[in-house]
Length: 201
Image 1 (cartoon, rainbow, N blue to C red):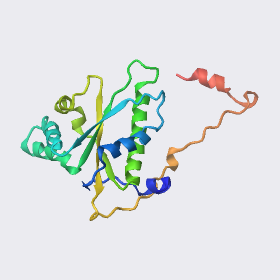
Image 2 (tube, rainbow, N blue to C red):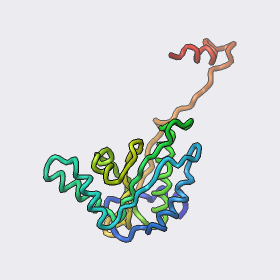
Image 3 (tube, one colour):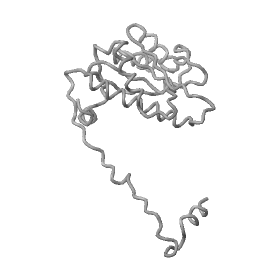
Image 4 (cartoon, rainbow, N blue to C red):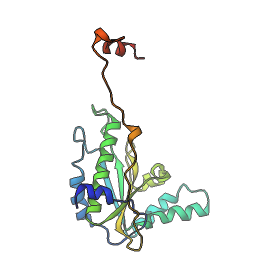
C-alpha cells in the first residue's frame, strides 16, 4: 500500500476481532515505527502486550476506581473490545537535554507510524485513553515505575468485515496556516526586527 493510500484509508476501528498480530509481528512493525523522528534517539517508551485471559485482569484494574456497579461492569469490559491491547508506557529520560515534551512528541510520532504499519498489514487499531491512564490500580498491576506514565492503549485486531468504513475527507486547514513576512529593510521600516524582538515581553 502506498503511504498516501494508507493515510487516506486508515480509520480508528471501534470493533476488532481475531486475528491480531503475533508478538513477533508486533515487534517487527514496532522496529520500523521506532524510526519516527526522535531527538536524541532516546526511545522514551516501552510497550506491555495484553492478550487472552490477561485482559480480564486488566479490566479489573480499569474498574478498581469505579464508584457504582454499572461503572464497574462498563470499565471491566473495555479490554474485551480487541484481541490485543498494546499498553504504551511513557518512560522519559529525566534530567536530559531533550525536554520532556519533546520526548512525548517522539512517542506520539512512533504510535502514528505504528498504526499506519498495522493498517498496511491489514490490521485495525484504535488509540484509547480515558481515566484508566491515571488509575492507581492499573499502574500497580502493570508495575510502572514512579516516573513512568500510561499514555494509552492501542486496541489491535482485525477490522470487523460487517462494519462499513466511512470514506475519509481531508481536514480543512486553511485557517491553521499563516505566512511570516520579515519586516522590510530598517531604512524603510518603522521598527527593525531587532527592535521588535527587544520590545517583546
